[in-house]
Image (tube, rainbow, N blue to C red; front, side, top):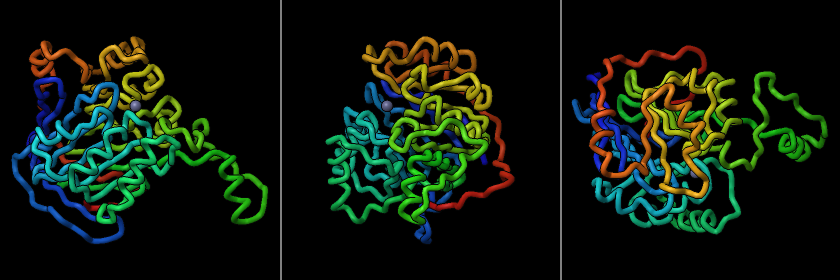
Length: 333
Ligand SMILES: [Zn+2]
């Protein structure tokens, strides 16, 4: 493992480059379909926050050329992906089914070969969601990965999928009625935060942690206080380096309790200038600013060089340590 370095890329797009010894391997869940295990010494893994306005699209490029795209909001990031040399996507993730996260995904599906697709499994009634399903339907070559707790390896790096919150009692009733014809309710887990509704897209965003040596980046779509609290209760929030601000820097996407555990050094807010939601909210900026350097995809290009200087940093090499306790199943992508 070499030294890790993060570098912010110039322009309207933010990016962090991690220089390390890392390869990328891929495998379907439950099957040994290992593909690119080559280790490319000194070649960086690059995390780029594409500027898609009031939306999300995060590109992860591994050293051997494999690619993961976390969300594809509108406008479609297709052109931006091509500009960065993307010709195929190994893992496409829809954190949740809202338009600002999947609105550009149909175009991405049409523009690139895709190997694996993962979503949160929560359907939506929107036309955009239906069109995405219609675009996926005739593509049997795309392997579906559900968002169960699993670890996807990218050479020396890993992408950990956090387990989702259990469905609330109403869902449990329905399941029991079908399966056992009894109306008795299971007790809520003692350590569970407030129940998260089964169709709460924001709070059922897929949670992902990208690890590389001592570096950890946290992505959780548009999760709000409920999901962040639940993840804390589950002890699923590690000390991290980089945080994609949940829910575009909304005040409902951050808590002091979360930040005190996560302790990010860098926070990136994917947000559009002058958006109708007022994102990022001043309260959120104040909280993030107390812990980290904060960047936005909507930052004016004239400030880019300042951002690059501020965000360039080196992290000491630190091999990943084995985690005690539960070992989620491991998938090699
Ligand atoms: Zn969103």
